[in-house]
Length: 114
Ligand code: DGP
Image (cartoon, rainbow, N blue to C red; front, top):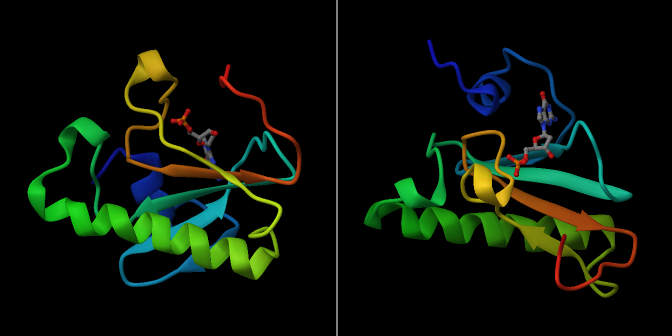
C-alpha cells in the first residue's frame, strides 16, 4: 500500500474537499489555505517530484495547466488572475512528494515569492 498522502486522497482513503476531477488529474482544497482560493491539482499517477518525470509524463503535466484554466473559469477568477506554484524538493518548499500544482487566488501576490 502506498504511503503517499495524495495517493490516499486520490483513492478516497483520506477525505478531501474535491473541486475537480477527470481521468488524468484531480483537485482539492488545500488544508492550510494561503489565499481565499488555494487548491492543489495533482496527477492521478504518482510522480514524486518534477525531477522524476519521464518523457511520457509531459502531456500529463499539461493536463495540470488545463485543469487550472478550467477551475479558474469555474471559480470566476480567470480575469482577476491566479498564481500557480509547483515546488520541487524540500529546498523549494515541497513537503508532499507527489507532484502537485498550487492554484492560489483572491488576494494580491508579490514578486519575488517568499
Ligand atoms: P508543498 O509544500 O508544495 O509540498 O505543498 C503541500 C501542500 O499540501 C501544503 O500546502 C499543505 C497541503 N496538505 C498537506 N496535507 C494535506 C491534507 O491532508 N489534505 C489537504 N487537502 N492538503 C494537505
